[in-house]
Length: 456
Ligand code: XMP
Image 1 (cartoon, rainbow, N blue to C red):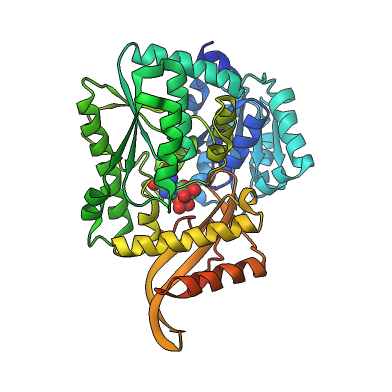
Image 2 (image 1 turned 120 degrees about the vertical axis):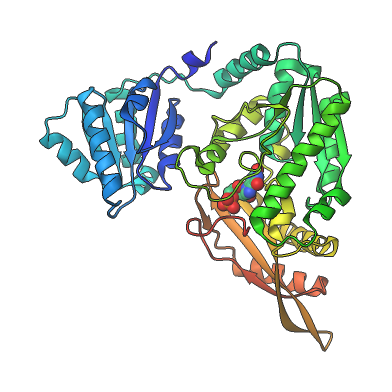
């Protein structure tokens, strides 16, 4: 099966500057129709060249600004003149459809006035489904079974008999990427796990255990803790931390790969949301996720990114189909630089140890409350703010620790979780009771946007 047949039916989402475009794209994919996001400034001929059967314009309510308004009006007009069916999603976009109707549009043009939020309701989803399946006449060709089959063939065709390496972080994305490549080329793949020292308590050991079993001789674990600590010593700027850790990661891979002989390819678990968020879709860089933005320019290995078309929920389906253990499929997302971006300011081994303990208590209490599967991500953040407290009747000038719990579908937007007060109370009293260096615990009540999920 070729990729063409997998994405034969396709919808393009044109983003007028809203965080909701990926919600729309995911909903389309739930109908088993492939969808891709592009910024509204994309030239119409490029959009038409993609061969989509329909275009959805998404925007948030309120005035998008005159440049975007003009671009949207021009694109929609030209697309419609070419007979392209259009759906406008967003309470601020009715004007677009009115304008098109006024001009006597060629293709069908409708709007979903409730905006992105209305896709949470059956009625809103029905409008979308009608548009995709009836108006655009898309066929449901996008399934994870066919994605796996197609990817296996593509990977084999791309790498031939050449050896491949993969960096495993212990997260779902790199594990699924490795498992998929392993399914395609077996022992031609060597997977490398780099312990940078910023993993959660006991996590490195666990990850090593799982991968030894699965990949056997094709698995290498590297203890690089000292190297990474030296590298971030004295660094306080978040982007600098990310860049240094990201580049060092690649360097360690390259060194290991060099020991294996002539290697050409590096597998990475980059997802579609990383691609869009790193600027390919929207033209704005929020953070350099090490999967994409932090790569050193002069990398000697070619990239193999079999998941770069997938959203997180699709990756979990692929993981199930590849028989990966539940423990891994449901592991919460963990940033590549690990606890390094959850320690504000300078990183020291002592601070990592403090954060590991606090994070461990948090995880125990969330599990105890039976909330593990209900929360997308929950973690602790060690701030560099010290506050006065009292411990054993003595003044204690310890750190302030932040607790964060968010729900999200793919990490691009997130809302803070209303953890029950008794759970919060246990978390806070255990942390302050058991960890002397922490004198205050606060709960993060920020959603994304405008905050991001990680603090750095
Ligand atoms: P932010 O903080 O950007 O995070 O709202 C969105 C999601 O991405 C995870 N994250 C990363 N994942 N490498 C990764 O693979 C990274 O450098 C990285 N930084 C953040 C974050 O945990 C959240 O799930």
